[in-house]
Length: 358
Image (cartoon, rainbow, N blue to C red):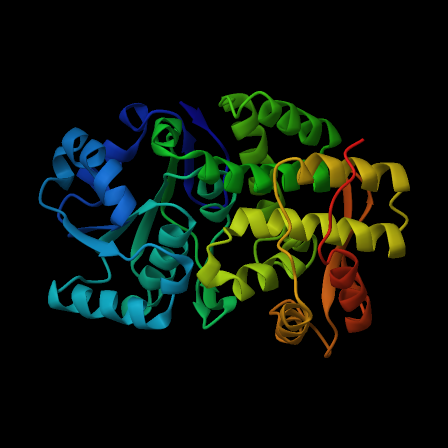
């Protein structure tokens, strides 16, 4: 079990059986009601492992969230708040979020708003949630097609990352998580970027050392800037364009990681145009990422819809679209005001884009 110094909460990586979860449940929450939030997938594949091994959870109420980014909405949160009220859950009870990024995002939001704040524990089960979504206290729901438009910063009481849950994932979920691992390397550690790409070329063979390196990067950045007032903004690299792609194609099922991967290529392209990223570095980023992630065939209508969504991005400031750009691989800067016309030019550049891998 590896303990990582987090922002006022427990962050442990390793088997749940070796973690402090049992002690937390039987001491701090000995007399508290315990609610477990899952989605349909973690209900089927992960819940039994939790309940079977922790006697304190045998009587826990289980609430199932619907699968799918299109269901990450206030209406679903309201249904859960009504259920919590029916169960007479109080402010000193605890909610356990067992799932991927949707569950930890929504579960944290639901807990932090319910009766002005209820304790919650995150137990991420997807690679993306383990290296990114569950870390750092960002919680929220979508507003129609706008990603995480409604939310609050709220830290869990504890975060337990057990890699054994990754055994339940299909390859596409690994791909989604690897995109955020690639991002951590691109913005902070060129060697990590290369190591993640090498791991992916090895048929996604799990590497716990890479997992921990990515967790530490995310945790360290958040520790330095918990409310995203400055340096934490670099974690948004790839997300300005990525979020509008994900939102526009929400019903088509383009995952968060896939959309961010495409966003990173496009924002690296902007970095080459605007921020001094070398042609060689851009070409390496492009070829590495597009070896695994495909760009949709945008129509003119698709591009116009995504440009309109950019104007409502939550990172915007002073009526300007703000973006993270690279100076080189491993060095990212933030708060760049990028003209809408340049985003349009970029999306048009990648319209029906076919990479030359020779």
